Length: 424
Picture 1: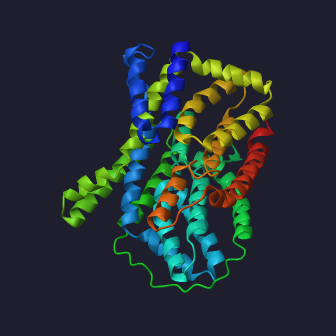
Picture 2 (picture 1 turned 60 degrees about the vertical axis):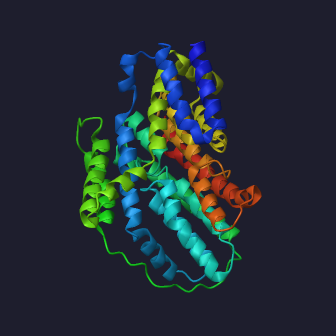
Picture 3 (picture 1 turned 90 degrees about the horizontal axis):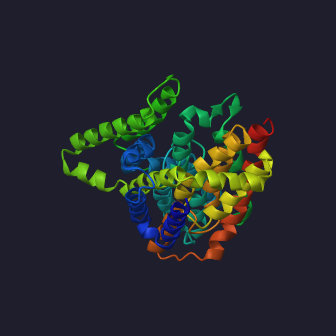
């Protein structure tokens, strides 16, 4: 167990120190776990959650096709036409980014919406930095709302066997979706205060033309089919993954036929985030290795000891520790590691793990908003600004992100406990 723990800590340190190579670090670690016999070779295939990987790959591809259809730009144009000034434009774009991010990857959402904010700022000769920051942190917030909103949500859904509808209504109680919406309202109020002096009027331009609505149908079809799959009893474990991959295949075939170029298929595949897929596949093996060695059980026992057998203290500890840790480390490996720990904690305390799962997801997802490096969407937003000649200082980012995150996570913390914890 000590060897496995040392290898795991070394893996985490290297992933934090070498963020550009973390997938390769995780892969090398997985190989070492197998070579040393900590995880038997025969258990490697079953250790990988293929449903999660297929869901991620499928939704990534469908979102790329959706972005190229220019439908998100048209929706943003419609929003701009409906608001009176810059303050409400920023608020509207942040909420729009949040809504999109409930169904589309956070980074992809920023790629769609941030350029609109930059364009508006150029027209008005103002800095686009505040609005792009608002868009990035809003997209992170809503990633926890649905099964496909973020990689962390997909990880939770796969591990806890949750379906799409479970994020809306589960065991007779409201799910994460409604908790996140209440948190979004609280966080948006803070943005209204932050941007209270942004009163410049704005003129809307021409609406972006959308000539192909098939990608929109594919994205909506993915959501609908995932909902329908929730009602299938005893369905195969890879059902959701197959739905996403089949619709991606349909989309790729359609685009190749439409453009009459096979090269389009190659370009579409190159745009897939294989880095994240390799990272997750490797982490599944690493985590299975430390679980096999007894490390997960030992960590769970330590948490139970710290929590004093109180579900509320345990819930609070998990959520706020996740907030602080996710402000500085990638939440994907963190959540992948902590899910079996949370399951072990719940088993040791003999309680329903749902409130602990949701606390982990909330803290890990929203904590990334505290700092510029806490979430990929933040990094992407800052990168877009840098390419447009704007450098973002940490203080400038945190002036917006900290009140937004504190409002959102405090609200989620209280609402989650009222819904899921108080009846335990």
